[in-house]
Amino acid sequence: MTDRWRPVWATVDLDALRHNAGILSRLIGTAALCAVVKADGYGHGDVPVARAALEGGATWLAVALVEEGVTLREAGIDAPTLLLSEPPPEGMAEAVDRRLVPTVYTVDGLESLSKVVAAGGLPPVAVQLKVDTGMHRVGADPSDVVALAAAVAAAPGLRFGALWSHLSVADETGDDDRAFTVGQLRILAETRAALVAAGLGPPMVHVANSAGAIAHPGSRHDMVRCGIALYGVVPMPALGPVLAGDPAVEGGELLRPVLSLRALVTHVRWLDAGERPSYGRRRELERRSLVATVPLGYADGVPRRYGAAGGTVLVGGRRCPLAGTVTMDQIVVDCGPDASVSVGDEVVLIGRQGPESLTVWDWATVLGTIGNEVLTEIGSRVPRVVVDTEPPHGVPDEEERR
Image 1: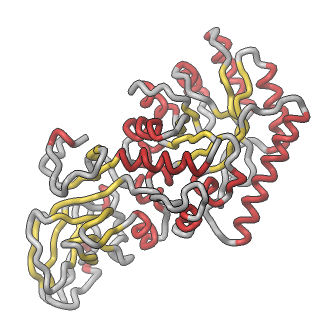
Image 2: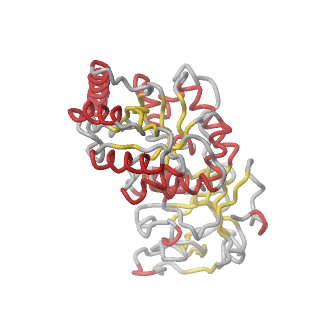
Image 3: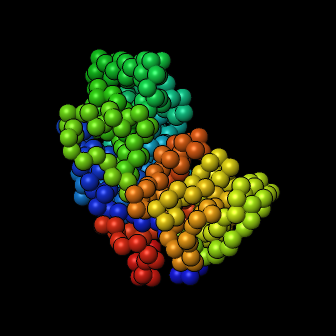
């Protein structure tokens, strides 16, 4: 498939990502920064993002899948890379062979890993034990962690590398949510104390995600796993002022958005008041308007409901609503009765145009979701233009596309 005839692209600014890694490194102080680059680097491109994060101050990487770790290794990236979930038995050998750091939280997983290491006569593998402190997704029950750590210590090919957990509501600011996070941190501390009492103290402890790092300084421990903040998006808008007020970053430039999404107008026509463009004829034009067609749709990550929910795009430095339902490959934009828009004009879906900007959180608020979903939904049909600084607006040269 070629994309050279389709005027749609997402720009990924690696300079912004390095900047964000630097901001987060200063925020967390002596803790190590682990850059979470799962899901193809949150849709930005895992390999360039991983390299930029390491250049910006990260010392660890994290992925969800063995396959994602393999991609990094095949690109020559050798940094310690944590698997955030226990690998399936059939993937354990590849994880070990690629020197990925396995997370384990079941007896079966531990036995599978131990057999792989013993069969290969490999050097001891550092195992990270994940404890479920309240997320209730994956992780060992706190009462089982000491026995798991003892099994690690007894296995000749394994050693205890870290104890960790995950915060489920660190991005929420309500009293109940903050109390729940405090409770998760207490369970983690109690689990660690039980390990120490058993002579199995973990060399490293980590629990903070982006939200924990910003809103709960006591969660930073030895390492922080930053995902969404690395890409220039606060986990929740309310945490923006919290980050800005932290003494480590106060008064300086804050997070920069790493990704922008743009396209060019491919068709325009005037439609009279009362016309109802697109599938379902859901929206009636209130006045004679210039309607522009833009060549990306729900197959590219613009949800079908975006227009009905009140989503907008930027045309000529103005916010313009969608004129009808998002289709698979195209959207139609109501540019208004006084518009001067032509084929080839730039449309911004995420990013800045003149005095206006549309952010990931603008999208997320309209759609009732979070920034993580908005970014990771941008599809593979949208070419990523990887740059270190934002290029002049316009269609990228073919050699710039990835």
